[in-house]
Length: 248
Image 1 (cartoon, rainbow, N blue to C red):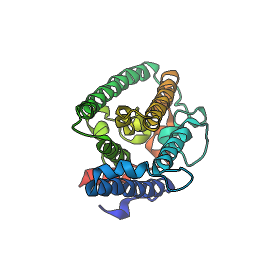
Image 2 (spheres, rainbow, N blue to C red; image 1 turned 180 degrees about the horizontal axis):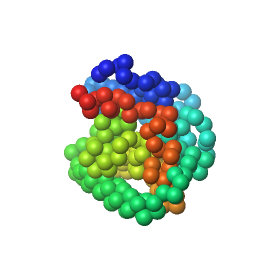
Image 3 (tube, helix red, strand yellow; image 1 turned 135 degrees about the horizontal axis):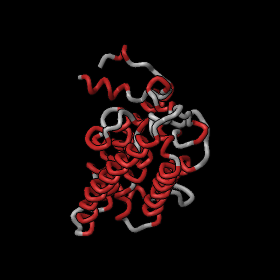
Image 4 (spheres, rainbow, N blue to C red; image 1 turned 45 degrees about the horizontal axis):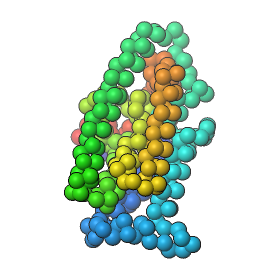
């Protein structure tokens, strides 16, 4: 990778630091799993003061991240990929072709639901293995931790859905950008307790909110009708590592 060709933006720095944090989280869970897979769940449920456990802390962190996605916010901390659904970030292209927009929406919807079908079928395997007793809660936790890391791998380096199904040029233009939390917490559906189910069903709310915005205002999600999504107007430039990787 030729680092001299990369334009360092505040968003790229922020995403890189968050990616490193996610590596640490996944690495920690993986090491604990290797040492003693049963101990992970026991450790998470062990109180260390005032009845608070590591599970409470992790749940609060994940829940706050999702609630942050649901609350109205015009902060520059937001990525352009998320902000495109907001009216104040919509800069209409003059006299854009509404028929082309309709075709784009139809095409993207087909691809999006293909991704959903593949994802549900893939994760149904984990659910079946769990119900058969072949894997346990510790494995589902490890899988979710891996998905937590993979979310940023997809943003910064390589996304199989982008490359093989959606065919969008970057995350800023991604039709399914805010599906990440739903994908992260899909394995939590199979663990029957409040913490896991609350994370999963809150992620569903995040996904539904995104889909409602897309249905009501598809013109905000296509660069042919929204100037903000054009490369020359991008402030994030989080695609740079990915482009460097693809050139290798």
